[in-house]
Length: 198
Image (cartoon, rainbow, N blue to C red; front, side, top):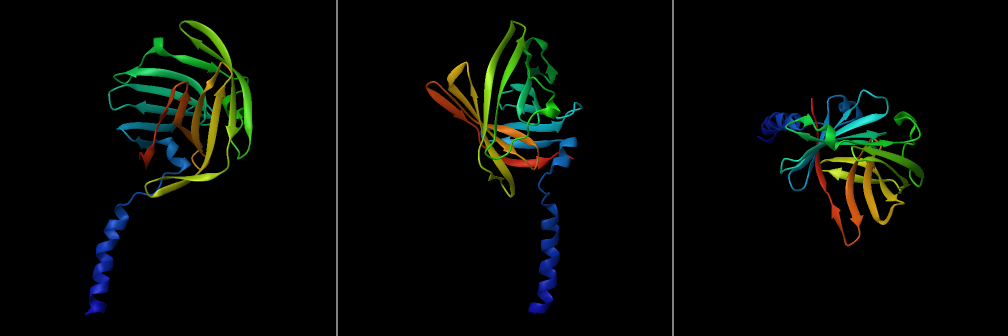
């Protein structure tokens, strides 16, 4: 009886296993990789047409939406808001680095980078010095999907109390904001699931 039931059990289990989507890879950036964030927000990453640039679309549960362009999937090149899926030019902030996005340093454990960055908004221009510190390689899990992760601490010369903590995923070539620390408090964000958009 056991021998008869075993093939049946295997047949029933096979469709369930087939329904589990594989964990996204860097190749999925062509169509999009979506992360879900505690609180109901999402962020979707795609490969941009410019070499070395990743596009990230953030959608908040309250309707706010924005798009950022990231050099090497980490360095902020542009931030702009969206209304009903349309870019709002007046909200655009552009950041200027001394080299092209595909020439920016890729994070390596224990490394770092200090760079002078210019910014341009409708109000005018400004500049600041940013210091990136890359921590030791560790891991980060989104449900059943686990990736290598390098923590990145980003500090700003203009505000000694401000620090952003990002998580860079070498296997995907992207990063996401984990925490912002500032005078009097901090904000944290937990990304808990990931899926490829195919």
